[in-house]
Amino acid sequence: MRHSKKTKRMRFTALLLFGILITANCLKAQNETKDLTIFGQVKVQVGKEVTKPLEYVWIEIKELKNITLADSLGYFKLNIKRPGAYKINLRGIGYQNCDTTINLQPEDSLNIYIKAANCNINDTIAKHDIKKGKIQLLLVGGFVPILFNNQNDFEKKYGLKYIEYGDQPPASLECLALYNRTIFEYLDSKFGKSWRLEVRPDVIGFQSH
Image (cartoon, rainbow, N blue to C red; front, side):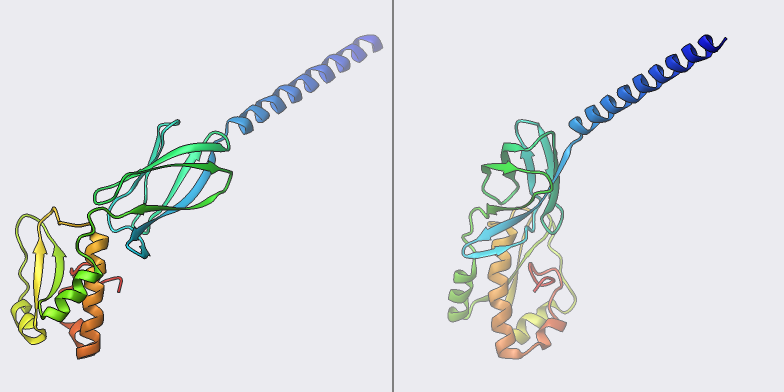
């Protein structure tokens, strides 16, 4: 009878150890396959300036076919299987496609830069327009232009014109914002801050200036 109880205890102990071993191996396998999270921010180079993106930017790890969209401030996160060097592609409307290789490590925080394309409207053009007395504030709309109630009065009062592009502007939003910021500074220097209470709120770059 004692021998039987001892045998049962040995069998129970063996089964318990076997169960612990299986559980440990499963946990180890889970830890080995758990994705690593990489955090980052996309920033846009517009001439000599660096700013947040005003358009959507897609970030893709080609080897993993892993793609994500940066938020309105340019922040994003990606999941990878293991640390190492990965080819990353950035693309978006109004930007130059960017392919780069980055060594990704766990809990990395990345700053990735993408260049604005076709920046033929910028702060230099704005300064030129100010000298010529042809001051403009740039907007991007849809198929049908929007007219605000006080728009004509504002244009006459401050000696400028609103220029509203359709849904396909001639330059990236960052370039248009760069132009407008130069005009904002000119208006501040000439009229103080009063114009800001009357300007159209949808002028590119006004809300963040």
